[in-house]
Image (tube, rainbow, N blue to C red):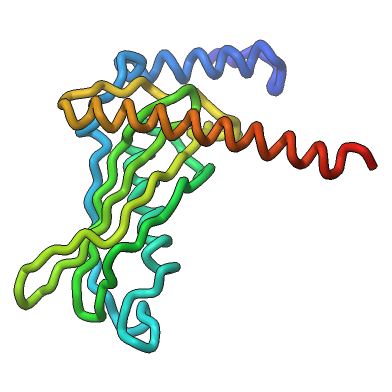
Length: 195
């Protein structure tokens, strides 16, 4: 077996490794459909998940939401992902002990190394079968490689009108996030820059 003569850690080696990894992805560069990232999780709400009045703790909901969203991001990017931001979490209805919590997530839009994942959460009464929309959130993830560096995410293939609407709205939310981030940096500079 012939040994490689490349030096480990050189720029050429890193670029060659990235090109090789991208070549291995093959058709991934053509993109993946939204349906490939769709994820659904279901858990029963147990007493240890609840507050004193028998509703699931908001922190527990956020924990499960992050997991469901991360699974969708992993499925789309086929890479490690890290949570970069959560736009908001909207709690609409409580979920009671003994009910099921259903979490549905899918990638809304891909940018360069990041992607927005939408999560909708429902309660299900196990006795009546009634579903209630309880929580919504938008979570941004960054794809990273084995060296924990950001890496490009395959494009998103939109399949339905609903996919296209969510894609457009994700772009609007990103513009707001970027404007907020720029404003925050300016405010921090003004507050601390003249010291």
